[in-house]
Length: 387
Image 1 (cartoon, helix red, strand yellow):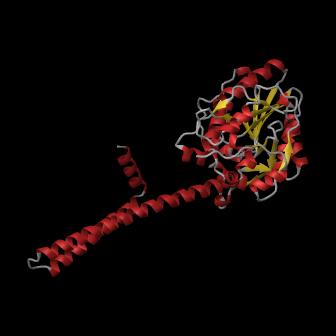
Image 2: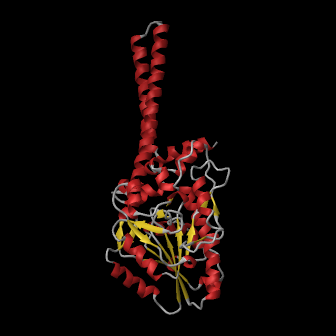
Image 3: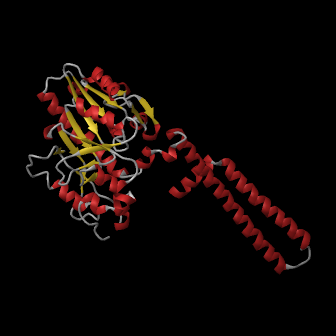
């Protein structure tokens, strides 16, 4: 029944292509019937049967041509939609490519952060700090854009809700926000403020190359008496140091490093959010360059202190087929151990993520970058397990 509904839907949406295919088939059948009557007026049943079979085959092929036309029409519609969303350079868009990596895990992070971790932190801040406004500043990137699907529904008491303002340079996140229905939401459109400078289509973000301009904008907004600033940061890769004791961000592209640095400066509390596979057991920029190649990243140390920096990622179970299971064990083994050198703490609760599929599918999901798979040991500090 679902299949028939889909056929009817595609037929309705592609009436012209469907009619062309149908008319072509009928025309072909009519032409061959005419030839059959013209050339085989006597009783040549065997020849007529062959001709009828040939007519049927040709009509079938033309119907298939009509179906192919419908398919390509659908494909062109998709191309046009992507053009409308991402602009003429969508094929080369960093955001578009990264959006397809760790997709389900990013939604798991967003859901867990908005439904469990962030409300708990907001209650703690409201109880322990005499603040009149809580600014939640959200970084750009495909890891954080799913947050905007959940933030309007975030459940906090009215006292806290009335103090919250959201600031972001994440254009893609605002797009996700616009897909929401506001009728029953806790937070409305005017609770979100787009900041950051000039649009950068490749990353679906607002950035400014001049850090002083970025800092000035934020100080005007957040450097006020009674304001408490929470920042949710991410980066293409999170460097964990040689022993997962020192988190650092890495960034490239116009204004991205400058933006993250300013956020670190003005923040009273920081969430660093990333899929597990984006956390690398390396420290030096040269080691990162060896693995990922391409343009040079700027490494941005996090020096805000362990109590003010929270890592939000996911872990794998003992039964997991994931090649990152050992990475999960090594990282989360730190959670219950005291460390004077670690510059972050783990989110509470920790977020479990189960990767669906058979072994081959799980590996493709967990290792979407060929260069990480190739340099697995350099990236994660242990040999790649056998499938």
